[in-house]
Image (cartoon, rainbow, N blue to C red; front, top):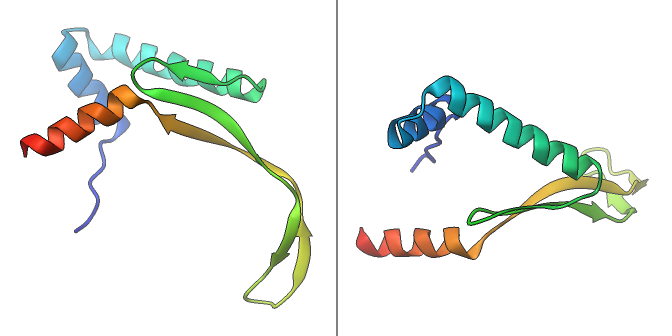
Length: 101
């Protein structure tokens, strides 16, 4: 079964219908929310979005890597990447929705 995905525009339309707020305002709020999260993460600050989850930066230490194609072994640099831990409120809502199906 192929995974279905809600696009940004579909999300904005759905939120607009549910809240009776026009799509332009929803899009503005959404884009600013993403910008704020990105700015805080780039400054090393994690962001808790109540009832959704926590966005944070994870660091992977440098380590020895193996390239399966070339067979080369090399030292891989330390890297950082954004992560999101889903909050318990959202997890519980998903669990209760699955029980109803």
